[in-house]
Image 1 (cartoon, rainbow, N blue to C red):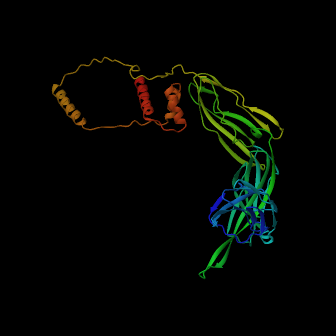
Image 2 (image 1 turned 60 degrees about the vertical axis):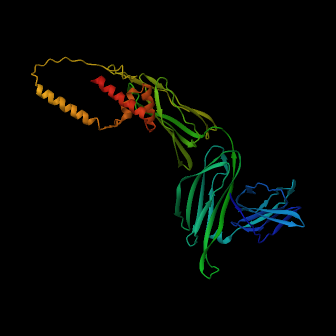
Image 3 (image 1 turned 90 degrees about the vertical axis):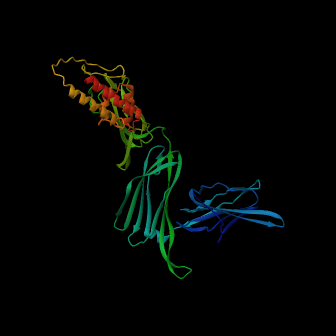
Length: 466
């Protein structure tokens, strides 16, 4: 809502209701469809409280302006405040009575009738159409199709769509489509409407059309002036509540890339829930398997239009690592079936995964640089003749090189091996490696301590192999 503070100049006020210190007025009582109306309340007093108005007769307030004047007559201080609300009625209405508090006294304005008539020229060249069901369900998406028709010979300089606001979610589905139906150029946009509470939704859509006209300014130059017209349409949608959870018609499945795997080798899985309805409010489903390590991503939810309905798909990927046989338990959800009109439970089947153990596999769970060293002693007997001159030369050369290297600082940074995640997977039973795998799976950076741990881990592995 736009609030304009400043001095307000009243040019024409046709209808007046006076109650003591309070006056209610409109700038015009007979309105062409698409034109705006300004409703104002004028109050005299020192302490004035205006009503809070967000809508008038169901139509949104577009802007609010304030002005005031202060006068002192014969030593008496008097303040006059004017608050004005601008809105665009799409049909004939009655502005209701409002309460204004002035100096601790309450005053009530009288209702004012506004007559709205069609703009024959505007409606001849342009049309606005809303296609939607007049009944809706809380939490269940329904499709709203909005079409704007423009005759090929009708010129317009600017178009702005004004969508309604209320206790509902409204989001565009797909892109705007433009085509020619033989008479009109048509712009079509589809929206997803999800009500949040019971009641009546006054769903009104307005198009603000700008028409450029030539005019002569005060200096005698020809300039372009934009004149706006409003093309509007509205429907009432009755909303009822039938269930607190997800509503629609769904199916559930689980896909695994393998059901037989070696110890601590990954099994990649995907949980899929899909069907007609909205799945955005479905909580993140966690899969729990005792004595197994599980890595998962946040679910991915996509929506398309299918058979003129909303079709949603929930996909959650995960990886399982274990050193013993395990069973992936069933995943179950409840929803209200819109076709059968009852609550239904659907679930996946349990899946048994066989883990094949490798008898020759060596597992390193804990790394201790002081205890995990294997020393191999080899006695070599060789017959040779000692060349003392060569030994002395090598010794002197080594001393010189060592002295020079003491002044040179060589810093070699340890580089993480390629495919680090896959190389560490067989050792996921190590608590530190498990933490590192979780970071790698979620594409997070490793700190210095973790990099040092990996370096020592692979060095220790090499020393064991040697």
